Length: 91
Image 1 (cartoon, rainbow, N blue to C red):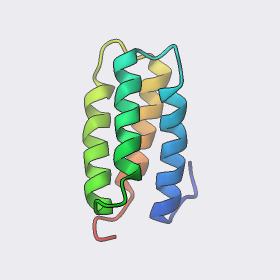
Image 2: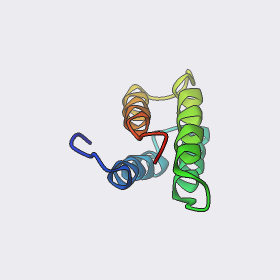
Image 3: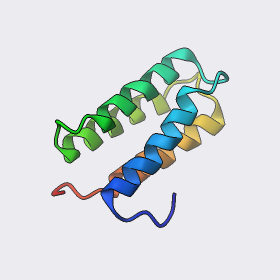
Image 4: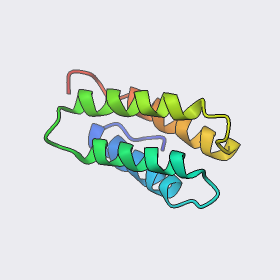
C-alpha cells in the first residue's frame, strides 16, 4: 500500500484489502458485513470524499476493537485506516 499518493489510488488500494476481508471466511460475519458497508461508503461518489473517509475510519476503529477479530485481519484493518487517514480533508 506504500507509494499511493493520490486519493483515488489510496481508495482503490483500500477497497482491494476490504474486498479481501469481506470474502475471507475465517473472518466473523459481522466484520465481513462491516467491510462491505465500508466498501459501499467509499464507492458512493455522491458523498464528499472527506465524509466517506471519516465515516469509513470510524467503522474501522469500531471493528478493530472487536474481540473476535483474527489478528491478521485486525492488522489489515489498522493498515486501511492508516491509509485513509492520509487523504487530505480538503480534497
